[in-house]
Amino acid sequence: MELKESLKNLVFDKSDLKQRVFAATKETFELFRTITRELISTFQEVNRSEGRNVAFEFTDHGDFEFEVKFAGDVLVFDMHTNVFEFSRDHQVMKSQYIREDSRRSYCGVIRIYNFLADSFTYHRDQDLGYMIGRVFVNCEKHYFIEGKRELGMLYNNFNIALINSESVQSIVESAIEYTTNFDLLTPPYDEVKMVSVGEMRSDYDKKSMATGKRLGFRFQADTD
Image 1 (cartoon, rainbow, N blue to C red):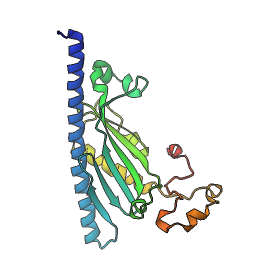
Image 2 (image 1 turned 120 degrees about the vertical axis):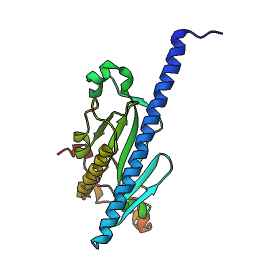
Image 3 (image 1 turned 30 degrees about the horizontal axis):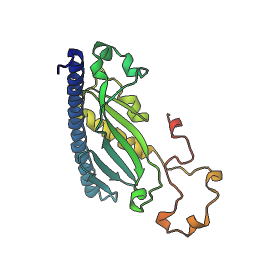
Image 4 (image 1 turned 90 degrees about the vertical axis):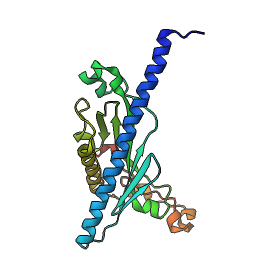
């Protein structure tokens, strides 16, 4: 049996592209892991030398996830194992960089989530976390970030932005800065004024009254 030339090229070329994207994303994720670990170590040294009492922890969770804890917050960095392409309506697709070579629109994704540290400490599985940013990386190690405030506005030059130690450190520092400024707000009274007998009789750390930094508010509106 002979393969059609067009089919053969499609399968092998697309597979090769996705493998290169995955490799570039994995290398980028490992750079995130290294830089974040070093940054947390620096925070720990400052914490000790200045006699501060703030917890800083770095924890690995396998090849595709790690987390950092600082003060009352946790940031989880997670790499998706699949490769994605931007939709035709996405602003990135309108750039000259993509129009010159459509293969550049295929990206791996690294996601950054923010949770309350107490949600993990007290096993509050119903608590809410938020994706504060996701980093798209293509086969040329160009990157683009969709995210909130510090992240979303500073890293959107896909055509010229290249992943390196300096850019990764800047992204991680911006994520920590945004998280620190992203405060826990009380939800509207009318949304939490009722509670069931079962919820009140359950153990404190297992109550089903969810907690989140913007519970009861539209996180999407947090743009200024």
